[in-house]
Length: 485
Image (cartoon, one colour):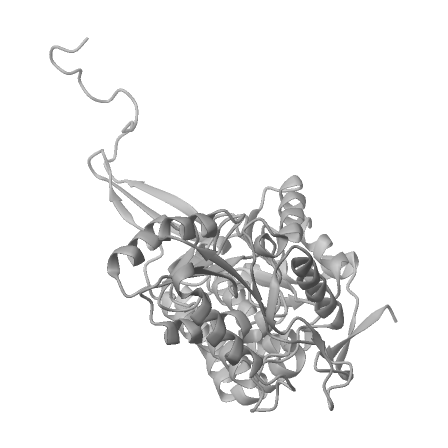
């Protein structure tokens, strides 16, 4: 038997959820071969029939939502209400994508020649390699797998080593819904199977969600041995602007949820609070009281407000970034410590942390923390606030709180991110709108919404000439203009 690894509960690492094999390049070969064989038959299934299978999977997930939610809480550390939201996203995505099975997949266009038609359609790419993170262990696989299946592809999924059990259960639901054997394949492990997957000659598209450094390596390797479609969803350094006329109670609620929901471990988490100096004292004071009162604990306990970060290594990394910020001159109004909890021995808990006095040049203001840390940057105007938001190398999500329409629309127009919220936090994307970012956050593709199908299919232009004679488009097929040279 080969090397194995275990998946544990980050709140109680002594609790093992499962033991899984470390995948190898040979395992990837087998998975791609199986997916390739099954895909050829699947691509011949009418798209509406493929959609029915996806819709059935959504029904299965809905029927087992409580069990799936508890599993997400235990394996990814998300509190129950957030774990339920993770599963609900997958349910909603299934039904939404199923609806696209009877929607338009292309456009018809007039020809410049008589008795000729032109239209576009989409065709599957073949086999898609997917690498998914642990922080949305059901939702993100659904964002990728459902559109890829609808488009007629086979799949090899390499989930995070921190969430293999959720991936196993998700794929089991796909098979129960009627996805053919061999069409969706799981390969578990750490870096090695992922590296083998993105360069495999039988993989025609790669979809990756994770960190910027890993995403760059994935893209470079995939294209060096390509050509392939490569879609990247990477990090964020998301900011919330609060202007003096904002509803501060609403802004407090939004910043609290945006910064500390999922223990700050969302790519869209609110990491920077860019607040006008006139209201900074009041807002930070309110946030400090609320953050200090948040209950850390077992994510399966309904009274818990904030669960663990994914492991102790992450807690120590977060703490190191906070210590560096304090050394640079920031002050912690609350938190700034690893927490040990009775009943959760060995759990990876970090106290919700607010840092004031952060300068836009500080490391904590520029690098993704991926933990429950909110950096407060004070500004004197909306223009300065927008400059602070835009100077980040990331461009995923941003928010502005204001009671006036003009500054809200100015922010929407001038902020360079893929998502902008007005009077709502930087988290909370809905599945029927495109999701993705600009700059180093991504490479132009979008997940979810109608555009989610694009990373898993290719355009095909079709011309039908029924004139019965040779017609020549786009060449000299018109008489010269009178008086022309």
